[in-house]
Length: 487
Image (tube, helix red, strand yellow):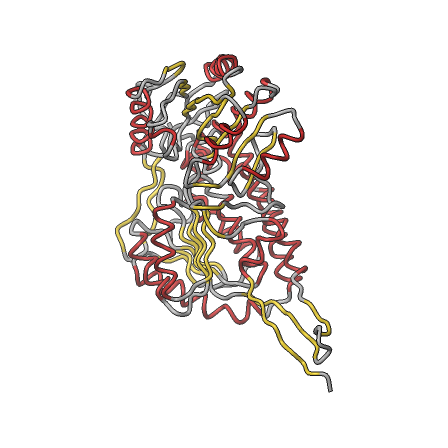
């Protein structure tokens, strides 16, 4: 049941498209945003069509020159004001995310902190954009290397972290001097609409940030990507969709950033501190209800400690409380949709059919909402889809290994390479794992690595480019080299 506070908050969330500094209605039938914990409609919002998308790009193009010429300090101060406003409104943002996405309120508060850090970090990076100046090796001229905004950008964000994924893309783009069109996910668009209202309050000029919500993503994004005025595409989502977008972007030779799927190995060696490993597993697997590209997907545990690790983990999983994220004590909210529940259950049933042993969960509970029980499986067979597909749900699948070489082989036996987790007390082994595991990120004796000051991204089919850190702003800058001959 929606509380009075929730009703009042929803009334303050805009329901239109945000184009050139004004709220507008879309050309399509209204989108219904629902609460995954109850199935109830939270709000009806505008639905952009292809023409709306081009109007948003028009606005970004028109504002591009003036925003690029805006002093870096001014851009920095706007982002810093946005950070400060987010801290003032953090309770509203946390509640809104819990309502539309389902995560427990405590985790939603954590996302406000995390998402806000991108605003603060890139407010500081905006004034540090630099170049190089010096004599060339031959002594015949002076080399000047300078950096400029890449131009208008299309930013496509996912549903699972509706605030942090928006700030992680918008903040570096604005810091670099780029204008943007943002297309949030259809399932969780309210947080982005509420956030762009905050950006307006922080002083972002009209046309610099434009937001289009739509139920026909490809039909709306396609013409924008094909438009020669667009210069950058950033996408977070599945690898299959990412491949299609890369193909489309290739026609215009667009700069692309792709944060795609994951199949993270969680490797526990025989010398691991099991208490820390279990604690890390709870974070790496059940944070965000398992709906994260960084979620541990395959638990690869040394055969000498596998039974004890599984026992301790199952005990912890049994203590998790399922419910609507606003309820006191809830640690596992709903999956984002009924389709997500069906997909998660299909992976579990496939593993069981291949001989896996069920230690906990394994089904959806009775009642309303798209919930799925936290699940632990051991003896997962190599042929199980659970080991090859991204789970995106609260399911642990455990396999064993006999020695370091086998552990590395199992960890790398995937087309993905976003993140890995390793638990060992052997420093030399930890160093070897940093070198040997084929992932863009790694947590060594920790189950949580994301940080605004660190480069986030993967290798292989987990994507291209990096978000966050010193590297994040470079994705939105073009480099120019100029030679000045010696007189």
